Image (tube, rainbow, N blue to C red; front, top):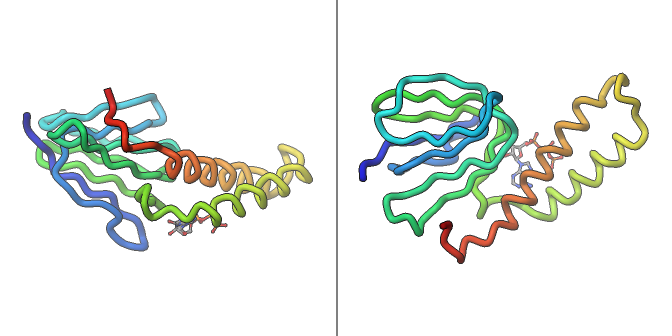
Length: 142
Ligand code: ATP
């Protein structure tokens, strides 16, 4: 097995840096599982979980990545996003509060109203944070 150097970077700083065997992301065109020596690509990302699989298959790092881009070169992978959090760094109480706020906003807005899209994205981010924080990583992936 081989590895590829991978960074996840946000305006607030570097959220992740490591040598991993496979990076799994959800691009706007669908799921991508990127191995070392992948063809160079740049792809826009959905608000979705990123899984970083290590050579020891029992070890997987989970990061909530809220959109942005993945850039793949022969030597490295970089994910650039406005916001991203490692599973362990997610504040669940804050995400629950944000989810409730977004739901409250959406309940008062029409799809065409100003602020609807913003509230929809806030809801999506909060749901991703909650689902990422809830992952049980004590059981290795198959
Ligand atoms: P909130 O209303 O709680 O700020 P939000 O979805 O509007 O939620 P963002 O604008 O996506 O927040 O994020 C602002 C910054 O706060 C980013 O750096 C992001 O990583 C961080 N952040 C937001 N929510 C959480 C959370 N639940 N746990 C840890 N970091 C968070």
